[in-house]
Length: 385
Ligand code: SF4
Ligand code: SF4
Image (tube, rainbow, N blue to C red; front, side, top):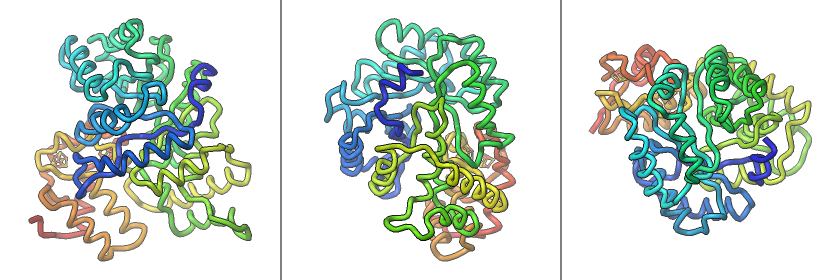
């Protein structure tokens, strides 16, 4: 742990899964905006960038190559990416995909490299195909400095992997205060399993895909009360969520998928001289969780694992977010317009043919088909051209 902690000057990592884009097209990164964000992030003393093969329809790694690697000396930053294990059909695919990633990112080595999104099933498949062996060999060859995996499954499944693979140097877990006691996500149990095996943790989704940055009502009041009577700028709701995850002893890095400069400035402001949550902040967060649990929003993290196989090209996470906005603020022109924009040129919630291909990919185990019925009922028919 201390070795990894020493390498990472500040605990906030730049997640490159929700970068600024041009014209709402997630495949077209806004390079100028991304470059400005990188500059500020590095100027403020942060160093860690996290990308992956599928992010932004395969364009995130290339954007990192253009906007970061081309513009800064290699030793100025730490770069992490991940093996898309679901694309590996035979052993030679590991070499091909890894070479492609080095080329996309324009580097000769990765600082951190992960087997992407393991669960009990995919870990067993990697055991057979040789994914664990592959990353160990790449480390021995000097092409990876630290090996680990990202994970979405039960604490028991995590324990099986950690027991079988003591060579794993870190694990990336979905941890946020909303999911801490969740039976599905098992943030607390997974974290405690990593502690038990002495494996340091990188946190992903600390703000639950943005959910914890947009609170209203009683949950917001619980956090706002912390600021009552104080002067200056009120801390953002996201700040409590990121600091909550970063306050855990065995966490050496918290990733935040940053989409614009305002978000970056906010995140880096409170993480520059990081302070763990104080007791009263911890209590306020617990109160907010109680209030949030009362709101029937869809707990989609926008990971997008569900979208590629959908025969109707339904932008599932966007439509879920549009629906969640109606839960928080009622059906209004803004969220109706967002919905219409999202279904333009794609399938709408009403177009779902209930084939179920999406649901097997969902790390949150959401009943996507049923939820899309609710979304369709909320927004009704909209023009798609
Ligand atoms: S069940 Fe619906 S949303 Fe899911 S993949 Fe099939 S058509 Fe797409
Ligand atoms: S529905 Fe599930 S798989 Fe799809 S984006 Fe949301 S959390 Fe990810």
